[in-house]
Amino acid sequence: MPKQRNYKQEKKIKSILSTSLAYAVLLTLVVIWLYPILWIVLHSFREEYNNLGGLVGIVQSNYFPKNFGLGVYKELFTNTLFPRWFLNTLMVAIGSFIISTFMQLSVAYVMSKIKFGKRKLLLNVAIILGLFPGFMSMIAVYFVLKAFGLTGSLYALVLVYSAGSGLGFYIAKGFFDIIPNSLVEAAKIDGASNARIFTSIILPISKPIIIYTALMTFIGPWMDFIFARVILGIDNTENHTVAIGLYDWMYSSQNDSNTFTLFAAGSVIVAIPIVILFLSLQRYYVEGVTSGSVKG
Image (cartoon, rainbow, N blue to C red; front, side, top):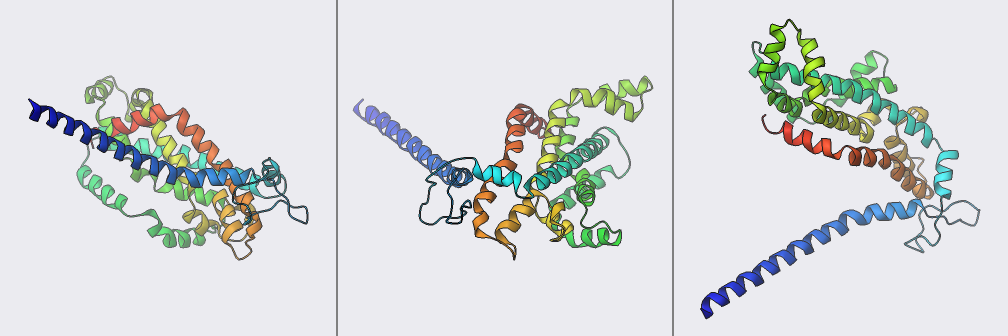
């Protein structure tokens, strides 16, 4: 009996220690992840002025702001190109997500519900192509756009984001795979075309995967820097997106370290739509991912 009691006590102590260690690791990770975000948010509300009466940027004398206010945000929206960059980014993201969502869902439906020759081969090729990072093709894409005189245009950016979006069909295909084929076959017997089946039967019962796909196709262009930088270039700053504009404030040849608080405020503003979208659509996002991953 004493041996059994000691064994239980040792097991309990080990369980407490492992749980405490897990919480300590998680707490450390939370601090590491949240600290930069908190620091950026605090600096976006820094309202301190230099000797010339302007808002200060990076201040070495005090790590945390001494005064808080909305002065930086007012400066951001009144005396910079940030509002124009924000609208450019919004236009590109909305245009891309509308076209890309339709293309991804259409390809997923074809791959899932329509049987045709070499379908398996096409699936394998799509998977292999999807393994390569998109930026590998950016030089080729740039010269193709240049040949058509489209470089520097926001429309070209929408075209680039949308053109390759069909390859991201696999999650949606997994969702469509769990929809009974008998539903599609019954509709075909009644004389419905594939387009009618897709729009009138499949899409109305696919809300989670539609929202998941739309969310992903919106976030990509909203946060992209590489393709936007290559296609839009460094001239004509009015056509820039937020990512390029904020980067140039900090790292271009004309950078100014005193714009750091503006950079912080811009970073906070550009994160707000994504946070709102993700929180409001989180339930559908989880349903879309889990349903789409049931069957590949």
